[in-house]
Image (cartoon, rainbow, N blue to C red; front, side, top):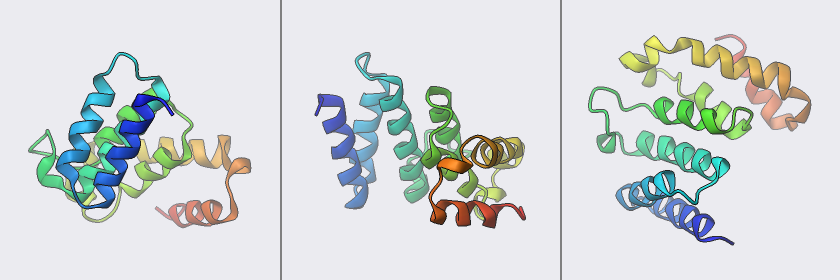
Length: 138
C-alpha cells in the first residue's frame, strides 16, 4: 500500500468516525500531492464531496455546500467510476436541489445517468441496476 493509499484510508476512517475536519485535511493533501495518480485524486475528491455533504459547514464555497462540485471534479480524473457517478445522481436530492450550484448543473445528472445506463449498465450488479432504475423517473 502506497503512502497515498494509506492517507486515503486514514481519511475514510476519520470520515466514518465523524471527524470531517481531519478527513478534509488529509484529502486536500492527497489532491495537491504531485505523487497522486488520477484515480487517487478522483477518490479523494469523491470522498471530499461525501464529507462536505456530512459537514456542509466545512465547504470552501460558503454559497454552495453540495458535494456535486467535488463529484464533478472527480469525474474529470476518471469519467467512468460508478461510485462517483451514483454520487452525482444522489446529489440531486431535495436538499441539494435547493442550492444554486445544483440548480445550474442539472445537466450533470443527465450525463451521469447516461454513462451509467448506456456505457456501464452491463457491468453493474443487480442492486446498482435497481438503484439506477429508481433514477429513471427523475
